[in-house]
Image 1 (cartoon, each protein chain N blue to C red):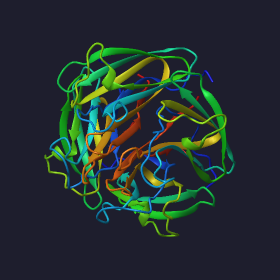
Image 2 (cartoon, rainbow over the protein chains, first blue to last red; image 1 turned 90 degrees about the horizontal axis):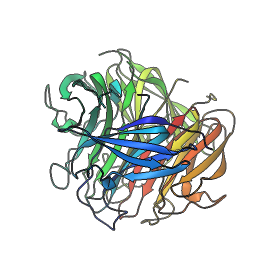
Image 3 (cartoon, helix red, strand yellow; image 1 turned 60 degrees about the horizontal axis):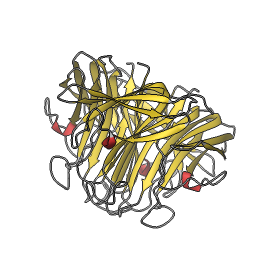
Image 4 (cartoon, rainbow over the protein chains, first blue to last red; image 1 turned 30 degrees about the vertical axis):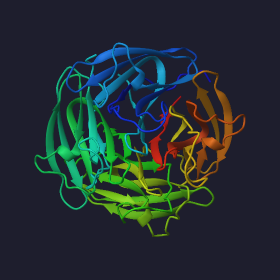
Length: 126
Length: 126
Length: 126
Length: 126
């Protein structure tokens, strides 16, 4: 315990927050999440940059994942420097000052029953 | 910002565009997507080759992902040199002249509630 | 075109063929699939071994993926040396004599609307 | 057969056991699973540590994956040293004394039709 695991740069090429939802909030609200695990004994300072198809990247969005903690970050909840628009294609790059592990999940509740997707993000030595 | 991340060759072994859909178009139309992120400061010239089970590969399908942009490409929309048939097994190889990151997603709306799958594609040094 | 891409050994730790289905056969039958892509100019001779929780591994199941072809193999359809039982946990190891890329997908139609999962399999140098 | 494949450390950054379910138990109960495959000829002694967002990690949860066997472990069923709470974000680190392969799956049956996600876990040399 306390040993850092993972990478300092992660990429999630897929990004799309559906604008509609069914079911009780906030659990069943359509959302995109990145789950970040920091196994190390140091707090991880994380910067997320959002890429779009038709304008310059936006960011960084800053957050901290404390030592020996997980943090499941909803892209829906990022608001500084600006909210991520719904129904819009985007990608994200996640940079941390200590190695972390990143996994991407979407819950899509646009229709009566929800759908899920998940994948480990792409780790980079860059 | 501006540093290239990823690989120049990616493989998506799974490919299948369902021929039927439920729900409003185009969001809920059954589709296969590859999301491509180009973090670099150079435009990425991408060539996609489609492999089938019973005939020679088709391609390249050519597209550009601009510098510092994401592009979510629906296989449904590829039409030059030819449309990808529905309800047909295929695979794809994606080659780019600058490193990019590729993630694969399918939305299947053949039944009343949609289903999703996603995975980071397989990066190759080849 | 014609250059081999991928690995010779792949692992899918998850395996489970639901015993029930809804919807038209065979598309909507609950199934587990491995999609194999052989980009090379040589036919790939593939051997699949199935691991169980309470008995010795079974196999090899033998199949060929022709040069420059994809093959989407349903575990449901493997029958020699024996059928894979439904509603049973298993894992699979896939070995090929030329490098291929393997991706795993399940369609679960036990309930009225189907669910999907997919992930690139785990490539090994072993 | 008998050759070890995989890694000794795996990370699943995403973790969340939905508190509600629809459909017959235990198959359709909402659950998170890690599927572990041990291809080697030695039993694998596995320790799972669970990370939370607001308290210290809990573990190890101990289990054995016998030689040449697969084991699909539901996080729902882990109870020693303590049960994992429902509707709570967590991550997990899996350590084994022989190389194994780990894949993560969730079945979410909170709504009438179930949803699935899966991804190969993140392997680490750490």
